[in-house]
Image (cartoon, rainbow, N blue to C red; front, side, top):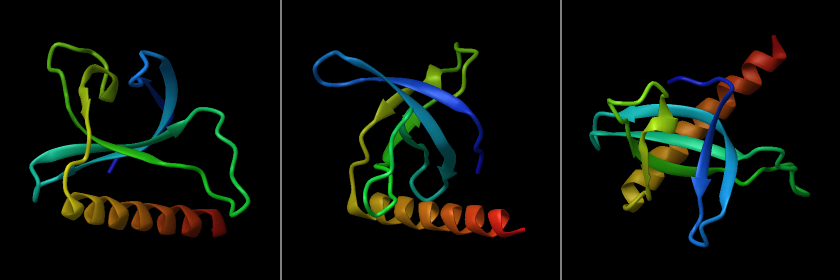
Length: 102
């Protein structure tokens, strides 16, 4: 699992570009795909202290020098994938909380 200060640009269905910060990326051997979790740059937490986190699978573009930015984002297609992503996110957030307590 990798995470750092990476940004990706996502074009929505209206053709508007939006900048997102990458939360982390990981690969799943079970599904044979790579996944990226990301959120809007400058996103504010809601009343529950949460930020809307987006998830996509992606294929890396071998011709590109960039990591997730050089790949093609694809929608997550199955409930099984969503369950696995949610599990990874919960693990990631638990680790982050433990690191903050040190």
